Length: 57
Ligand SMILES: [Zn+2]
Image 1 (tube, rainbow, N blue to C red):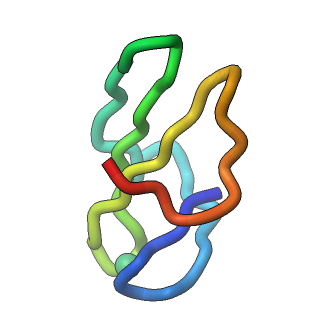
Image 2: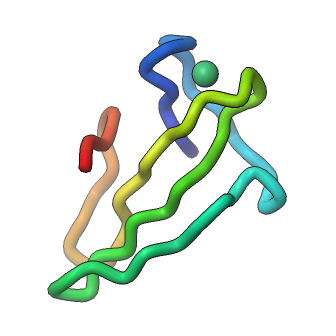
Image 3: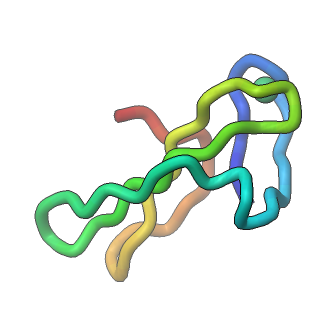
């Protein structure tokens, strides 16, 4: 589930909307996506992260 700031909507995006995956420190993974309108979204994921809202990087 990803939240787009510009659309102000949550999307369940298919894997082909993933444009990049970045491994950050402490096992955090930043997944870069585009929403259906083509806006870029960054979602943080990882063992210690619970995604509850828009992610900012
Ligand atoms: Zn959007």
